[in-house]
Length: 292
Ligand code: NAD
Image (cartoon, rainbow, N blue to C red; front, side):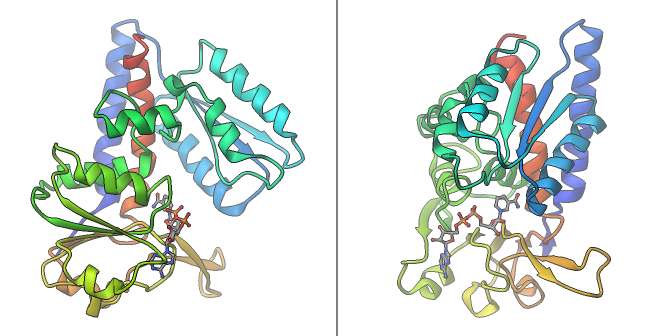
């Protein structure tokens, strides 16, 4: 069994990105500027946005955090999105989800200029992904593709079972794994909460991507010997023995599943850090796509 180490892989990518920034400076080009918009004080969102901003600083990107109260109206948020769309100094931006209930997330996603949509959630970018046209790939699936590449894992002709069909992870990942490119060319089965005989289906998988958010859901009896397992799940579990009062758990019963796998991602330290560097890679790509 080999660990798919997102921590060290993302570190290597961060170094490459720092070098790209240095090169841009030497060439007199603009430094990438990523803006993160955070609404409210959701614990998870604060952590995610915090690490995104910190990563920007580490690799030399310019970054701005815009933190708004959760009382902000939908109109005010849409006006802010419009301002960022028109700000020449901003190369890419994200609006951290989830948003408060009184704001329609779809409206906000649609309002973002696809050319600055480095999260890759806009329908234009999702459409580009399906049609193999240039655009931004959603960060978490793109991070997983990068892991396949960096570890040179064969995906062609393999049966890939994706568990979970969210618009940001499961659904796009299922499309990306079926595309006629590497990583891809897999035969994909997309499963979800209504799937019947899930265990039998997952047992046939050469590659399992689990993105549901249920700790310990994927057990050893569901996994074929030699399978590749990527665990996207991030769930906070109360734990008094930890300084923060909680620990992070993935969807996979790691201890019992890992010995059966050829490759597996740990949680934490697997897919999570790759998501953040994908966002950075998208921001750099934004400059190139926009001719800067
Ligand atoms: P979600 O929470 O929007 O939806 C969950 C999905 O799981 C649904 O499609 C549902 O059909 C499916 N599901 C639920 N119970 C199931 C069952 N018993 N069998 C089969 N399918 C079932 O999905 P999401 O936003 O993709 O989040 C999933 C998990 O991934 C969460 O823990 C989230 O925190 C985590 N996540 C991690 C990253 C990362 O960077 N590592 C990024 C995004 C999300």
